[in-house]
Every structure is written in C-alpha cells, then in structure tokens.
Image (cartoon, rainbow, N blue to C red; front, side, top):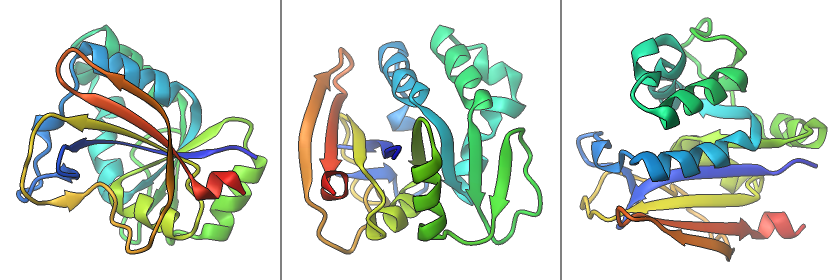
Length: 189
C-alpha cells in the first residue's frame, strides 16, 4: 500500500496563511525549494481542495513562474507530470492536464487509491489534509517551519482529534527554516 503524505510550509506558530490569507512569508529559497522538490518527486498523485488547486495551477498555466530558478523549473515539471485529484463542488472542469474533479472527499475512495498506487500520494491544503487526518489516511507529515510568527490565520493542522506523531527526520536550512518529518499512528497499522 502506498503512503499518503502531507507537506506544508507553516509559520513557527503553526499557520499556513496569516489572517489576511497571505503566505509570502513562507516563500522558500533555492535550498528549501530543492528540498521540497525532492519530497514532491516521491508522489505520482496529488490530492487538492479547490483553493489549493487554484494556488498551484499556475505551475502549469504560467510559464514565467517556472523560469525563476532551477528549483522552480524542476518543481513545475514535477507538478505537470503528476496526476491531480481536485475536490470541489464548484469547479466544472479542470484547468490543467492530468487532473480530475471529484465532488466530495470520499475516505474509502482515497483508501482504494492508496491500495492501488505504486508510489506515494500527497495531500495538499490544510483543510483537505484535516479531513484525511480525521479519516486516518495520512501516513506521514512533512512540515517546514518558517522563522516567523504570524499570530493567526489558517492552521496547518485543522484537526479536532488527537493524532499521535513520531519524529523520524529533521533538517535545518541556512535561511532559518526547519524541516520536521513525522509518521502518524495510521502508518503503524
């Protein structure tokens, strides 16, 4: 069975967006972006909510975005090559290739995807990740903490349940960001 992983860049106080919805403070430098690319390289399928999909689709639809650096070119290629499942009640058709729209997040369907997959699946976006955590589907969490306190906003983990985590990797970056990798109790099953 393939793993389902959640990767997020968050403020030190645990938010992926500040109260105004901004996340520019989380922009990775070349070192961190290359590291994130290596995490993304493991997944052949990405699960997104509509808002995260809208945030990510310029990696395919805006050629200038990929031209910023070698790391951004690499990430754009990785993103275009991956299959995407977008959970949305409002989108009628995908704006990117290799993308399908699902109306509802169905934990049983995601469990089947995990069972049939030959490589990792990644869940993107805090709200969708929260639903996947509540359903016991997330196996690993890859968190990159930015050295900033934003005081509020969208939490990286909108989970209203107890989730036991086991640290299995960590790394410190030159820009002050820190990577923490955890296995969930779901991964022990």
